[in-house]
Amino acid sequence: MSNINILLSTIRKFKPEGQRKIIGLLRKQDLGYDDINNLSVSLRDDVFQKGVASKDIIADSLSEFIKRSYKECNEESFKELVSQLNQATNIVQGGTSIKKFAQIFSSRKKGLYNFAQKDLKDEKLAEQIKNFNPTGNIESDAEVFVSFLQKFNLGIGQNKYLNIYLDKNKNKNLRYLQLAYNELQTISDKMLKFAKLTIPPTENPEVRKLEKFLKQKYKLDYIHLENVEQAENVKKCLEIATQKNIPIPNNIIVTPYFFENGISGLNRLSSDLKTTIYIAANPVLNVYYELLKTVSENLKEKSVLFADNLWQRLKLYSTERPEHVIMHEMMHSKNPILLCNKKIPEKLKDTVCNISRYAKQSFNFQNDEIRNELLTKQVLGGLNPKEQEILNILS
Image (cartoon, rainbow, N blue to C red; front, side, top):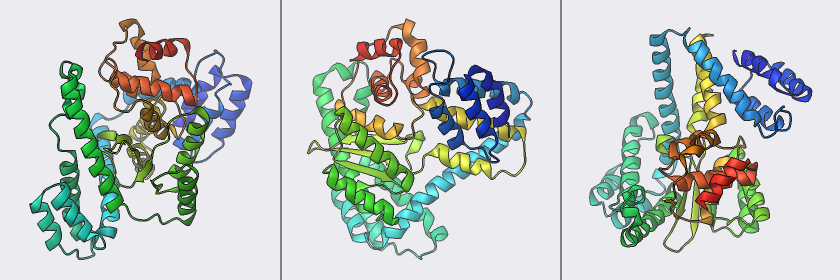
């Protein structure tokens, strides 16, 4: 696979110790994202220039490889492969959610009926739930379960005022902001109730044991960790939060139900002023990567997509730490729903773009997200002088 060529072209940018680590990794037969990510973390102090992140050096090499290799791809074949992978990712991601939902539908049918009727005030949905009897065949029942989930999510998220947060004029009006704030809390109440109602019990005994331990140690109201990987990430974040005096949420939910539009995490404040963070159990990029590995042909198009997947992972957030998303959501609790209308000077735009792809997309649009991304990086890896300057402006 072409990841080997990428690393070979990158190796000269590191000190001898870093080069030895790269050469050691190249001996692996099935080089994957986790290998690249772990290497990036371990190379932190092995770059020549002070303050240069190893993840950025690797990401830059990936970018050059993509630009160079894409020219050799057949455009139609490339588009067809991308389309197939996107479709398969949605099916796998959505299928996991539907399977989980189907497992508990019968046992919690009455609760779902009451939720639709009382919380969503949707009599039609309530009657559909009441009259539906699943066959047990996930393929034949899937369409109905998808419909139920969509209607629940639509009902929970219905709003009149939430768009105020992104309206440059209305978000300066305290009356409108109060209405939006109250509405968001109502939605948060419904989200938490629905999550507790629909998320199935944790199956892995080790994860269940960790849930019980963390709930007692950190005095959590509710916790669901879903899988070993995310359970360990949550544990690390809670330890860091305790050391750094970061507010610990009241509820932590690693959810099997996928978030739309690439969202991997949420932080919500309920009407009782308790915070819940939601983390996707299996992010889209993970599913996409695993499906890409199943493509049998050793195509140039496949190599480009592998490189793009790795690049996105390295550049999406400001650190390469696997617990980044969880810490980012926990950090939102320092200033819950606090908007930042301060503008970042144009001369610092390049610095913002280099923080992460997420920060780049938010430049002078959602600067509260840039501030939160910088706070997260500050805790997990530290800031360079220009990043600290931006954080000072936004704080």
